[in-house]
Length: 373
Length: 265
Image (cartoon, rainbow over all chains, first blue to last red):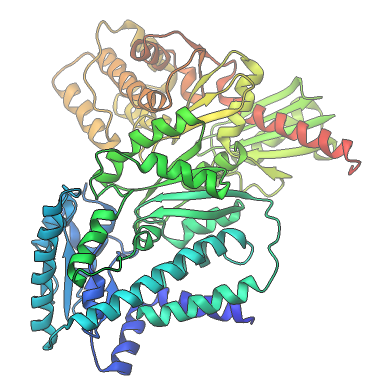
């Protein structure tokens, strides 16, 4: 096994078994883990406690118990999270941090069925205003106080600054990885690419950074090879399960960039340096964030952003990974779809349902799309 | 040169044999699809009709839901590409295709060279497909063949939901128990199928000529309902059940010509 293969396997193992990753962390550090619900949260605050921030992004369960609490039209990812809550999957977490940028998250945050305490906070949506930053600082202060109570220790500004540094480094290395994955699709196929991203949700970020750094250096030691397949950009909340990514692989699609909430949206904007305190700068990160359906954007730049990504990467098309019943994503779609059509950007929408077990329809869509690119 | 296209659908198996990419020497349909004896029987019928055997077929392309399960194919091509190919061959003015098959419905937009500009498919739901009509025919104690005639006799359409086959079935039963005229219910069922399929067509934007294909296009009641919904004339593809297989046979012909040119065969 080459070094590249070994690192990819290590990251894929973490992505496939978050429980083990959490148990290993606990055994190593003596500290616990804190759940981070989709889509965005000030993970740096959790990291500063020494606890492991653990992403909670659903699974592949057959939904039964969740039907008691959620309507059928709640998005697939929340159905999965509710099912897993009901089964006690998150009860080992010291707490769960929940942002509420959509209606389903607002409802779900009020009826958490696990035993871990929840910390619910709100992202301001009138983002250009300075008062939005002030509001979010207050929200972050509340989170900080609650975290301190849960972990039984004070979170110092110095610790937060150190965590911001760790996270900025991880975001930077992941942005570099995206480019490397685009240049070396023979090495980083869609499944491997996703595993590199997913593993960062279950690993202490400086360790993840080190592994990804090593991976990048190893890959770049080889020359870039020509790619005879097609190149695509993914947009949406997430692109799972692996059976879907296998279909992309089967039809020779290289993912040259993404705008997925689970992947590149997490690494899009750093926390800036500056004289202001760390909480304020973290709040500013939300103000500076762009191109996401749950972060209000009155100018609707997502379509332009995606088209710029197409021209920068030389992508042949955009694949919209539409999370089933995600209304914020569905509201954005007609806007950028029209822009794509006007500019002749090839695009395909596929529905993402984490509960899915059959993929024939997706296979037909992807095959047809590739045949007609 | 003979090429073959086989469309292994969910509800039926279709085979077309083409001579030199133009002349159809066999076009056979067996009303059972993937996982059944249908594909083999359709093949045997086509060989019998044409007097050909497998060795005479230069290239064979499989399409349809069961395309990957059909092992004898030289290549598998999606049914969207094949329907587009087949329809454009038959109706070069086609710009929008509405294909309603056994378990899915698709709307395909074509450019003026027959290329697929955009397509939309139904999602994991039998409403608006041939299966929906199957279920309704059973409840209404009629046959698929008789439904168009019944529809023509109806003065108005009963209201039938287009969202779910199971709910629509209970709506039909409810209408029957209220004594609503069976022909009106059938017309309502056709309207329901049409509204679902037209919903897909609207998403891609409508451009004429609009061509209907797939097994359901044989039902004139559904075609009329589609025309009423779209307020536009719809052309029914000749032999609509076999247009996917025809497209596959055309792709097979192109593939064979390419191989010949490259001196590979």
